[in-house]
Every structure is written in C-alpha cells, then in structure tokens.
Length: 186
Image (cartoon, rainbow, N blue to C red):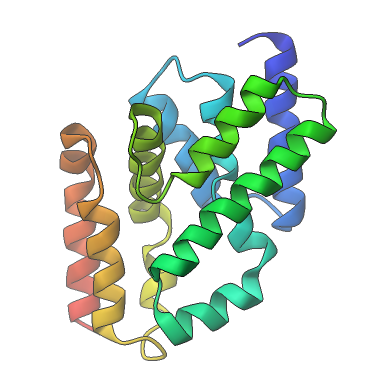
C-alpha cells in the first residue's frame, strides 16, 4: 500500500473506533483474518474488513430491538445492515476525497459481507466469521436466557456454515465446536 492509502486506512480505523467508543476486537480480528486469507489485500478490502459492521455500532438500540423480535439473522435486517453500512462508509470516503473506485468497491464489499457472492466478498465473509468465533462467542453466550439456546445455536451454525474457504473452515471448526459445547452446558 502507498503512504496515502495507509493514511486513509488509519482515518477509517479512527472514524470507526471513535463511533464505537474504542477499538473493537471483532473489527481488528476481521482485518487480521482478511490479511491472513489474502496477504496482498488491497485498500478497499482492508477498509471493508475494519468497517463492515459500522451499521451495528451506529444503530445499536435498533439492532437490540430487532434481535429480540426477529433473531440475529432476519433477511430484511441483514439486507438493511449491509446496505446502510455500505452507504455510511461511502459517505465517509467521499468526504475524505477517496477515489471513486475505492468508494464503489468498499460499498460493494460491505453490502455483500453477510452472504458473499464473489471472490473478495467471500474473503470478507469468511474473515468476519473467523473473527466472530475468536472474539464474539462469549457475547452471544451471555445473552442466554434472554435469547433461547436454539436462537444462539442458529447464529453459531450460520456463521460457521457460511464459510466458503475450506482452509478457514478447518481452522475455525475447533472454536465452533467449543462454542456449541459451551452453549449446551448453559
């Protein structure tokens, strides 16, 4: 990456961390996993990795309300989550005079990070899932009994089964099994 690209990535990280009131282990780990899966990941993929869940940070209250009403994976919410997140980051990048190609790609990647569909969207999706199992499991376990074991297990299954890369899936499988085992013991 060029010096200018590194500076833009730093601005994105600062922007996301400021909204989040500090660093997010999930965002940091998602970026780490993107670099692990694709060591030559370009600026757009790295920005999307760190900012893919920006909508959840900004709309924390409505996310909690939605989760209780529809579960963690309602299709309408997922669509809104991805689309809104893409728009937020596109606006931020425009304000920072980013190249249109970077803006368009970041928006596309964030709009597709839950389900993938192309090579780089799949990389982001897989990195998101890997980070989820490394950093977010306890958060979901702590939501029991407000959320049923079935609902939590469905989230674990969704995050694991959507992994496209067999290498990533093999690496994450022990964490998935450990999470499932912990949930069963609650």
